Length: 152
Ligand code: CA
Image 1 (cartoon, rainbow, N blue to C red):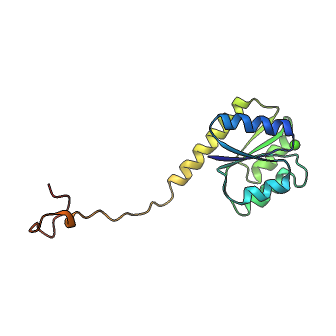
Image 2 (spheres, helix red, strand yellow):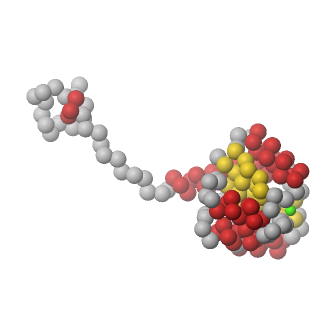
């Protein structure tokens, strides 16, 4: 599972990279909104952790760019009391938010929950119909041609 973290605070970005890597994820960190939007739009990530306050493009602009082309789950990081940011983020297509400062344990739990939902979404996509295998070519000569199933 690949996670993109878009966070300009170097220490927090490094902390998230370390914690998520230790939890088994492959992590890239972008430290500004322009790089974050570019990387996220490549479509190689299973989840994006997106800070609101970013240089270049803010989190809402990155989210708008991303939602124009991708449905990847997005967890937004907002200031603790910024209710308007949370509402704006959820309205703009974020899947969840977490107020700063947060505990890594809570972030990890939300990341895992979003990835589970993402997996379920994929599960309900139409499955490819496979042709039933035919065994007739391995049957002895003389076996009925209409026989279905392996020769015993
Ligand atoms: Ca920030």
